[in-house]
Image (tube, rainbow, N blue to C red):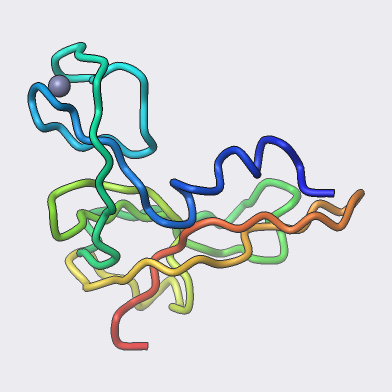
Length: 131
Ligand code: ZN
């Protein structure tokens, strides 16, 4: 059975669907009900670009229990080509090779397996563009 919460989040998580404020133009991701800049409540739908540059990252060496097997890994912030910033794990890259300013693309990957139910959760990760 597919969990209700994951099902509800499917569209914007899998298609990088963001909201754009109809008043001030601010792009928000994930989508929200109220614009954080001007307080407006009407949004249009925009699809985010899937490429950008890494602007910051942090290496996790002591991971929460469900991610122990993956440590060390890096969580980064990327600025997409339209200026929107996202946070995600940096995948397919040795943590020592990660550099601020490197080009990344966004891919959907398995995030974790729920050990009790065998449910896989998927989400976006940053992958260095040279891979
Ligand atoms: Zn706004």
